[in-house]
Length: 428
Image 1 (spheres, rainbow, N blue to C red):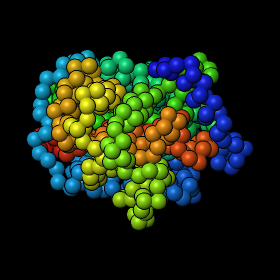
Image 2: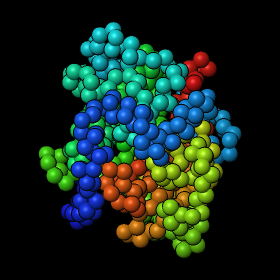
Image 3: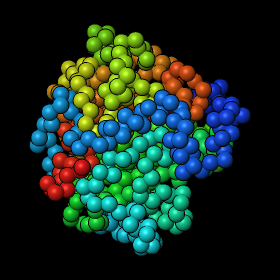
């Protein structure tokens, strides 16, 4: 994933380099002595930082809710998704997973495998914190097992989608090097879970999750659902070392900004739901399960454990846009769905386009070339969220373009392929 230009690379590098953390602070000197497990234990024992600990408690409450699905008004619309042939190389994916299983002992297999309807589908989270250590962790198994897991991703995803996932992992490794805590953040700081039994015809799937990369994959014959997904980066570019030039999430940001800037002024005004990234209008109740903003999620609404969130439609209708602007929405969809194999991706995009009459585009923040921003594309069959963030490891107190979060959801029980499952396969 190469930067779009030399100027982009220089600007991004200069931007985040001015916000490097003080590695002599207790936060980093303590973390240097810890691995992922002891780091998580320290977090839970000390409830620090308090804002993140409070959020994890809210996440626990949400995790205990039965799965329903993201909706716009609390009611799931049935019949939006259909079983179809998407040309997915299911035999090759099945063989790749079976290769992983062949390398594991029984204890490891027992840790990796879950029933098809297991609640652990919904256990993913995006902080560096190992909050729920389910499945196998790539850094804790022999490298041949890790490489076999990566081959599962390579076999399942499109070539460009696989490169995107690897870029997210490599940037996580780079952040670990910057902060001198490679045992906490590295390219293998991810958990891999298998649901059901690999099959060429029946329902099954897998998930991989860790810092800034969470991918849930449901398979049924030659059909695939990759949702929810979370892809992020801080910073979103590697500016030194063997992976120098690796970048991620620039196309999604550039396309959203281009769309917003192309709208007529009245439509821009209608699209903007809050003028500032942390707007006083984002009223806080103190209930992190429903509040519009928190320090970790910031503006995005559909991240970890938000499987049942009600997200009302906001902004402007895509059906009111010009042909060129509608094409930009489809280009955004192409980038957000990049993990999907080409044929599956095109079928998903065609479904999205068929719902343009009830698809909305909304915006938070400014829309000048240098502004940080949030945007959302939302319809009955898709939610795309793009959000620039303030620093978590870097020190910028305001959102910046070098820290990005993106989310994909399939509302109305589409996540985890739930709408395509038999009754006894429904996610818990």
